[in-house]
Image 1 (cartoon, rainbow, N blue to C red):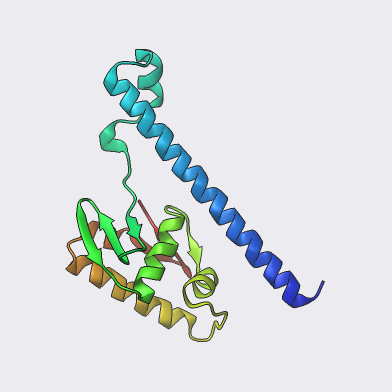
Image 2 (cartoon, rainbow, N blue to C red; image 1 turned 90 degrees about the vertical axis):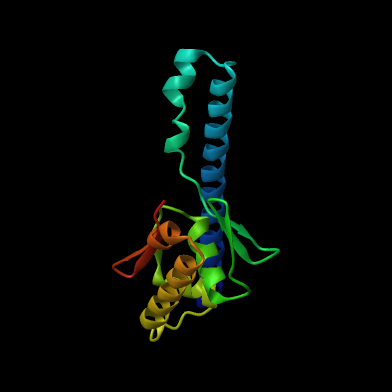
Length: 157
C-alpha cells in the first residue's frame, strides 16, 4: 500500500468512526426522549422509567445546524452564519459534542488542508470569530461551550 493510499484509508476510517459515534449519540438522545415521553404519559413502569430517564431539565440540547439556510438554531434562536469557515467549524464540532477534536482533524475537515505551519493561529482566529458571532447573535452560552485545550477543541455541552 502506498503512503497516499494509507492516508486515504486512514481518512475514511476516521470519517466512519465519526459517523458511527454521531449515530450512537443521536440514538441515545432519541431513547432518552422516548423514555421521558413515556414517563410523562404514564405508559411506562413508574419505577423503571424514573430510574432510566433523566429529568427534562437535565437533558442537554445540541445546536441544530441547518445546512439549507447555513444557520445555527440554539434555544429558540436562529443565527445565519452563511457559507463560511465559522459554519464549517461549528458543524465539525457539533458532529462530536463533548469530544475533543484535534487541530489536524479541524484542518482536514474545515479547511481540507494538512499544513500545520499556519494551523494554530488560523484556528484560534476562527474560533475567536465564531464565538464573537455567536455572542452577537444572542447565543453566549453556546459561544462559551466552545473550549480549547492543548491543541484540541470541544463543544462542551
